Length: 257
Length: 257
DNA sequence: CCAAAAGTGTTCCGTCTACACCCATGA
DNA sequence: TCATGGGTGTAGACGGAACACTTTTGG
Image 1 (cartoon, each protein chain N blue to C red):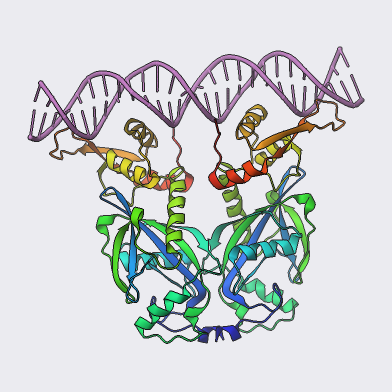
Image 2 (cartoon, each protein chain N blue to C red):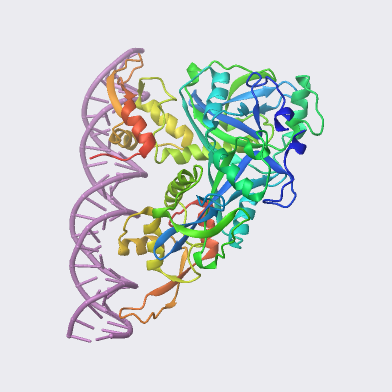
C-alpha cells in the first residue's frame, strides 16, 4: 500500500505522511546592497547549492506547504509567495546527487527507495525583507545564505533553471501588480523602490517618470522627510497603503481617477 | 513498495506505471458559432461533466503527458498547449464522485485504494481548431463534446473553477503573445480573428483599431480576396507567418520598426 | 440604387520618454 | 558657493479610442 511505502521520516514535517513524487521549491528573493539576492542552501555532501525545498503533507494545501518551508528557513511568516511553474521533465536528475545528501543523513537507499523515484517540483517565488531574515540551515546543509542572482554559485539539479524562470515570472508581475511591500522596510525613499524595480528588470529607469508613475497608482503614502546627513536635499519617505496595495495585488494595477 | 501499490490499470496508458498523487487536466478551447467552447466529458456514472484529464507516466515528461491526453480525446497533435496552474488544495474533493466513476468500470475501491488518495492536478490549456477535432469519449464517459464556456453544464469536482482560471490565464496571454494560429483555419479574414479576440476577452473591439494593431505586429500575411457571395465588399484573407508567429510566442509581441 | 460589411483616415486624448530646470543640504 | 541628489515641469513621440468617410459587393 502506498501509505506504507512513504517513509515516516522527519526531514521536513515531523512524522507526517507526505505526498509522493511531488516536491516544492521556493525561490526566495531579497534585496541587499543594490543587488537582487536568493536564499540558498549548501549541501553538506558535495558543497553544491540548492533552493530551499521540501515535500507536501498528505492533507496539506500546496500553498500552506510553501509557507511552511519558507518559514522554516527564514523565520518569516506573512510574505508574498506565489506559485509560478511546475517543473516536470522526466530527466530532472535529482538522483545522482540526492544519494549523497541522504547518505550524509544516514538514510539507507535502495533502487525502490521513496527518495529515488522521479519527482516533479512546484516552483514558488517569494519576496522578503532581507534584514528580517534569519537563515536557518536544515540537517542536510552546511549553510543557508544569500547569494547574488547575478553570480550564482554552482547549483545542483535544475535549480539554476528554476531561478531563471522565477525571475522571468517576477518581471512579468511588475507590469500588472505592485511590488516592494515585502522587500523594503516600512518607510523608504522612492529611490529605494526605484532601485528594486531596476534590479528586477535589469535596466535603468528614469527617476522623474518612475516617481510620477508609482505615485499615480495611489498605493503610496507620503511621510516626513529623511535627513541622512548627506549633502543634498533630504528625500521624503513613503510607506505602502496596505489596503490599496492588497487591492492592487488582487485586481491589478490601474490608476483611479 | 510504491511500485506495487500503483495499479497496473489501463485507463490511460496501457499498463505503464503512473506517478501517484498527481493528475493533469486539459482545458481545451475551441471556437464555434462565435462562441468560445470547451471540450468536456460526461461521466457515465452520474451524468456530471468533467475536463479531459489523466495521469502521468513514471518516466514521462509533464508536457508529453498533456499532449498524449489531448491527442487521445481530439485526434490532434501539434497544438498550442500550455501549463497554467497547479490546483493543490487539500480539499479538492475527487473522492465522493470518483467512487461512482470507478464502480462503473468495475474497479474495486477500498479506503487505501490508489484512486482514493489525495490528488493535486496540473492545469493545461489548449487552443485548437474546432473543425479538426473528432471527440473521442473514454471508457468512463457517456459523451465527449463541446460546451459553451458561457453556459457550462453541471461540472464535477473543482473543474468549473479550473476552467475559470484557464480563461483568466488566456486573457492575460492576449496582452503579450499572439493567439489564433491554432484556433483558425490556415487562411481567414481579419474579422474572424477579431471575433476570436472578442470572444476570449468578452467584449467588443473596434474594427479599425483592431486591424491596425494586429497588422502592426508583422505576424500576418495578406492573401487573395475571398468572395463569399454575400452582398458586400470581399474581405482579404490572411495567414499567420509561422516564423514570426513562433518568434512572437517566445519573445512576446512587439512592433518592429 | 441600396444595404452591408470591408477598408482607410482623422481627431482627440492620455501616457511614456527624455531632458531641463529649480531646490535643499552639508561640506 | 559648490557638488550632489531630490523634486517638478514640459515638449514631442507614441498608441489607443471613437468615429467618419469611402469602396466593394450582390440584390
